[in-house]
Structure formats: structure tokens, C-alpha cells
Amino acid sequence: MPLVIDGPTYRPARVIARVAHEYIARHLEQTRETNPRTAASVATIDAIEAVIDTAFRASLRREEGYIPRLSLAIIAPDEPGHTLMFEEALPLTPGSLARLSPAVARSRLHVGVWNVRDQLYAWGTVRSLPISSCVIEVAAPGLLVVKHCQSEQRRKLVNVAVLDGDQIKIVDERASRTADCPSLVSSLIGSEGTASPSSVDVLVELAVSMRGHGRGGALLVVPSDNELWRESIVHPLPYAVRPRFSALGDLARESGNRLNSHWEPDLRATVEMIAGLTAVDGATVITDQYELIAFGAKIARRDGHLRVEQVIVTEPIEDTAPVIVHPTQLGGTRHFSAVQFVHDQRDAMALVASQDGRFTIFSWSPSEDMVHAHRVESLLL
Image 1 (cartoon, rainbow, N blue to C red):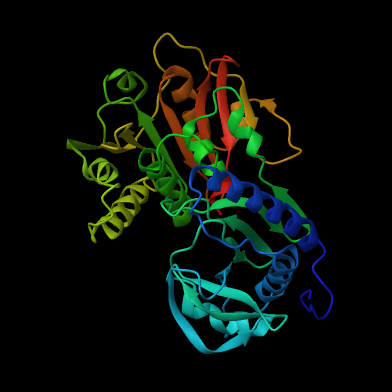
Image 2: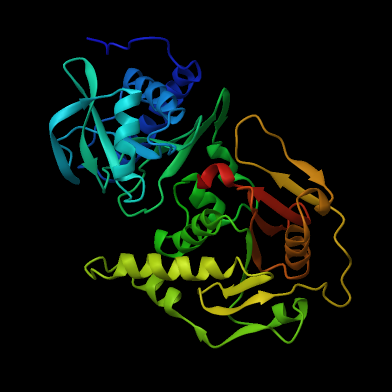
């Protein structure tokens, strides 16, 4: 029997419900090819549509003056990983979600939602999610993100689509297969076959935290086996670190040892500390082994190198096309300096967060023979 959905629906919900259902079913099938014992339930199109519709209406409410922020996971109560269950399941209404949001907004918990007697109910909260879970997150008024749990080892869920009012952005999985796509971008898209999560997801965590502090910032990732990057930095460095701070790299190497109960909180604290340094005027510099070298560094054009005049810009969203622009069109000094640094140091990468929430990953593209700016804020929400 189909779900009963009362009242008018949010029109983009149906479009995204189909996209999300097909995406999750396809990825679950791929997972089962490598792990036949994978057991999971894919949310129906009707359930996804109903949760998106209710979440959208909840996002426009206020609860004691506060904007609701919460994450809804469409999973059955008997799936592993639940932390608590309500004695009486709550009807899934905008009002009930708004009232529940303060309990989960800062705790990294998801509200579990499932079909009970042909109606959707919130049955409790979960922290860990099974593979194939569909998650709808209320990020801001009228702003929803549809996510997918692709792996139990990944801390960052993979974004499938972003709904901003009546605007729909569907993540383009094919973008990860373009020439010279950095592994960080591929990991954010959720591409299969990218580098191991323990190595790539450290940068994903840093990117999320950089965007989260809202102050704007720049992070330069340089090779650990040479010092040529110093030719693009003004000396002396105001906040140099000696010896190099290696705690983040040590935690990345320990990431396979989940038996260490302190690993996850230590990683989170270290990531937030280094991401916080990026808010200082200038750029934070780390190696590709995640060793902190300096922060507040000023970027300068390398001797003998030309000023950058063009950069190619892409966003991994369906129906968008690459554009070539002058670096000054990307933002302020922080963006222009990052473009110049990557142009002069082609084995380096730069991550730049704007105060308005935009986030750009700069890398050198040999196939295009220019700096490539990857706009990825839709993947970090």
C-alpha cells in the first residue's frame, strides 16, 4: 500500500526522490557485487519524497526563535547502529521535526524515519548508518541536502543533490572521471576506486571544517619531499612551526585501527585545530603527509613566472559547463593568490573557503595546461 501524504507537496521533492532512489539502488548493487553479505533496505521513492516535503516545510519554521537544523535518515528501526528508540514513534510533521531539532542539531545524530502502518514516523535517533541509507539534511531555511551513506568507514556522507528553494542541483558523478580530477574531488563526489579513505578523507574533513568556521581561509598542500614551494612564499614566515606538527598525519596512518577509542575524537579535534588556523590572514601550509609547516603565510609570484591570466572553472553539477575566466572573477586576494601559487607550484594543491560558503579546490591540469578551479561547496553541505 502506498504512503499516505497529506496536503500539498514541495514540487522538486518528486524529481529528487526518483534521482536519489535510482542512485542509491545502483550503488547498493555495486556494493553487493564486492560484498554479497551486505544487507540494507533502499528507501522507496514515496518515502523519500514525503521526507523531503516535510523537511522543507520544517526548515521554514522557527522553534523558540531558532532555525531548525537536523538530519533525517530513512532506515528501519531494526537496522544496526541505533542509539535510542522513542517509546511512542512521532508522526512525521513539520511541527514535530522543528521541536525535535534542538536535541540533535549539535550531536551528529540522525533522526530515524520509517513507514509504520502506511505513515512515516520518527522512531528514534541513530549515530552510525548502514550502507545505502538515504539521508535528508536541513541545512538552512529552504536549503536541503540529500545524502547517501556509501561506506560505513566514511565519516562524510556523499551528497546526491542540493535543494535550495525551487532550485535543484544534482551532483554529476561523471565529473570524477574527467582528466586530471584530483582524488579529493573524486572522494567528495563518492567515486568508486578513489584512493583509500584513510588518505583522502583527511582533506575532506579539513575542507568541511574550513567551510564550517565561516571566516574564510586558504590551505596549501605541498609535497613532503621538496622545498620548492618556499619560492612562492614571502619570508620570513610569521607563524612557522618547528618541528613540523605531525599529529594529523599520525592519526591518518592510524585510521585503520578503529579499536582505539580515542582515534575519532582526536582526529576531529586535530582537524578543527588546523582548520581554525586557516582563518588567520594568509595561508596555512601542510604537506601531502598532513604535517603542519606554517600558517598566516603570504603568497608571492615565483621569480621568472608569469602572472596568471586564465583559469578553468567547473562545478560537479549536472547541466553545468566549464568556463574560462580571469582569476579576479573567482573572488578576492585569497583566490587570486591560490591560483598563482598552484600555477607556479604545479605539484601542489590549494583549498580556499569564502566567508559566503563558497569553496574552491585549485589544482594544475596538464591536459588543459592551466590551473583548474573545482567549485565544490555543493559537495560539502
